[in-house]
Length: 158
Image (cartoon, rainbow, N blue to C red; front, side):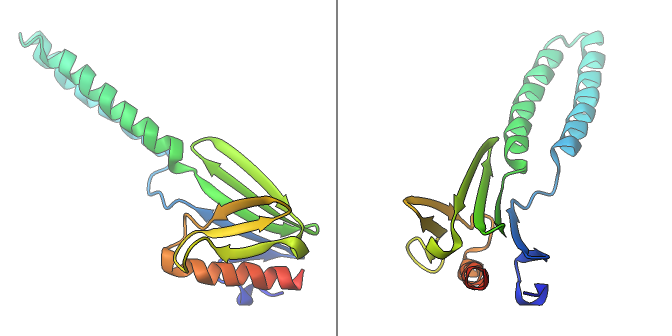
């Protein structure tokens, strides 16, 4: 199958891969550098005010940086979330990563069902051999039906 047939997948030889990931504008390392620069500026300003006789500015700067650091950690924890679906070696492999948790499920292509969970705009349920996995979180709801059709088409060709 050629790559022109697929909208969401990457084809390499006999393998077909779908990489569905969160749309993040800032990587965790960029966020770390941003936080470090914010700390330098905020603590520098707080230290200047502390030396000028305003002792409460510095503790509030620390409190602010702790709150911002906590928010940045939550963001960075989910920045690399994603779903990887691969049709390779006679198996359909679904890998999910969410907040550092990793889940891998393998299916035999001829025994798998691909269908929306509730409606055309709901998550796609991949099920077979007594297991099921929901994918499509990182695809716009109106495109999930097209993704499901694409995966079904690839399975038929396997």
